[in-house]
Length: 453
Picture (spheres, rainbow, N blue to C red):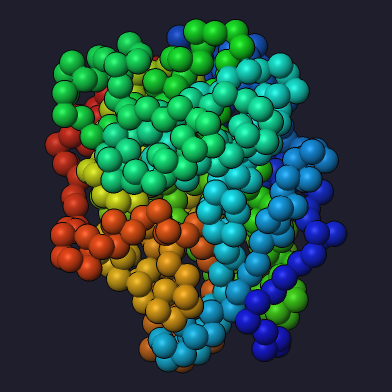
């Protein structure tokens, strides 16, 4: 077994294809439904929102989807990203576990999100789109699409969830510096935003609300399309470059993961690292565990219902079958804003329902504690979202210490926390709490799930 700390691939090993798990599902997924007719959607139904190439990828069952050369040329700036063996963390934990992390914080935007922002911008550009609207929680996705907009000369409009807009001014400044317009959501720019503000003037916002605003704005102009940073099949597809590289890097380490861990809000970074390994596990009957970690204050996979629901609050999107807390559910304003989404990616939901993915949740304070422990050992301060994966990895390593087992643990360190220092300052000053969701509000949101599906 290698005694290296870092495992680096050169640009020749940059994947030429994305991996599409739809080709290998043990059972087919439930169809996406038109919100009016409750019948399966067609490509034409999605044309006002997405470019044709993205729609084709959303519906594809091909195992490999070629990465266009212009996209690979941009990827080369930071891809392949490094994988590290967390030897100092192992020593600090006194564990026989072998801990590896794939570090996506080396991208220009500081997270995994450019892996899908770049191709989505490219496909829009070649179809003549001039403007893209989107939503963002903590700002990682908005930052990445702003970056992609500069590369492909596109106007970018970002609706940022209001609680994160206020918590993370430097994320907003980054987007605006790159030329994007960043709007606190809910806003008075859209009918859906005004409706929310009329009923809840002090609303902290949610990703569901921000999606409604972005979609509403997109369909008003022929030169505008909408882009989503997680949840949908094509987004998870683009993220698989992470796992495909990790497979080669684990070979360099002469090791193989007993468990693969990622945090989950919409699900893209978890899918990105997990799906290529899950393909191998299903194909070769491997015993690898796949652990999807979410906040206890927004427990979509661990407490939600597996049902058809809207992806947004104003019910402008198609109906997808997923684990959901209800499209009107607004999570409390914890700092991992990228994980404050009421639903989970349909592909991840489907695989969790089949028992191939194991969900778990952690509270805010223990995740910040884990992130600081990691930073003190490895020197990298994770984003609050990534702290959930760090917490699970430490938890599993501590279990190995108790049992004496030497398991290989791989997790996706999906972004750095350099724009999240106020959150860390608040944690160190004792100003953060373990926020809880309102069970009555969640029950009301679940009671409002669309029927007849």
